Structures are given as structure tokens and as C-alpha cells.
Amino acid sequence: MRQVHVYVIGDVIGVGFRAWTKIQAKDLQVNGWVRNVHDKEHVFGRGGGVEAIFQGTEYQLNQMIQRIKAGPSIARVDDVEVYWQEVKDIFPSFEIRK
Image (tube, rainbow, N blue to C red; front, side):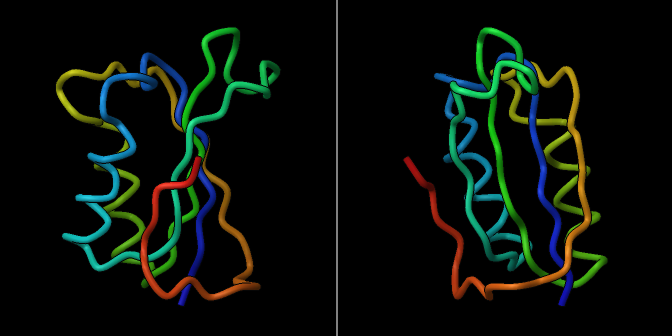
């Protein structure tokens, strides 16, 4: 199992990005979480962004990253920062966090 931590920068808050991400994760059988972030201006800028952790096989995670970079049609993804990490906690499912 592998883990990736991503920061999604762009017009991704208030457009259903988290719900869309959960659907993609379910489709790819990826576990983890996604949440909106408003307090990391140094990462996302003034408008905030979306942060997520995904767990799965390397293939599943690469597929998830490609989907996140494309985003849903209603969103605008300007950049995705991707950080591969060592797995510390195993997530049993995928959830939307507040």
C-alpha cells in the first residue's frame, strides 16, 4: 500500500469538488479523506483550496492524481502539489472531512 498527500489549488471550493473526489475514490477503490482548507494561504492563496490523502496501490494513486488534475467540469484546477508519504495510519474507507 502507498499513500499520497495532495494540495489542489484553483477554484475548487463551493463547486462540489469534495463530493466529486469521493466518487472518484470509490470508483478507484482508494481510501483516505478530502477537505476544504482556508487557513493555509501560503499554499493555496487567499481563496483556499482542497487537501486530500489517498491510499491504495501505486497504480490506483496515479489514476487518482490524474483525475484530480483534471477535476470536475465545474471546477478549475490550477495546480496539484503531490507528496508521496510513508503510510502511518490505515484508512478503512474514504471520507469528506470538515
